Length: 235
Image (cartoon, rainbow, N blue to C red; front, side, top):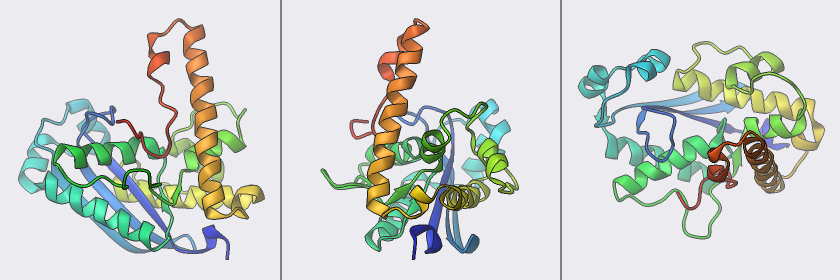
């Protein structure tokens, strides 16, 4: 069977900010999906140990007070999430992450912060990983408009109930990945690890194009565009 017809696992984080090297995990979800329907779901609420900015709370709904009162210690949550992902990868189950370099790098930085083992051993590939954002950018390169998860759901006919709730986003990411596989046979029929390598190349190409665009605008941010996927190896 093709990869998208087998078990897939959606993964999503809601965090304290937008920098994966500095932000902390607030909520996380890991959702097993078969034939587009959830069959098992795990969720976490962490006390990040730092204040959650009000503008971030406005997005995902978790305040500093709630996280401190109801959240579990961050090191425990981080370790459990990483163990869950490693378990799926060891079994060859793809983890679907919309914009993987953000979520996986942030998780790896949290592991580093608490002196826990990294997501992948040195020299090993973390995965298999499916990143619908990378595939969408490569396969429908010239489509105008946003490339957010909400926008992708609209393009690929996926219902997203409760955007920026980790469980809802994780499930929607899997459904978008399945829709991409159905629309683009070159993706749907691909070997899983060949597709992994394709995504790595597609992401690097996008990063180069984005950095060039920033340079043309005179932005100093061009030098900080990272080409690594699905995880910043030198985070």
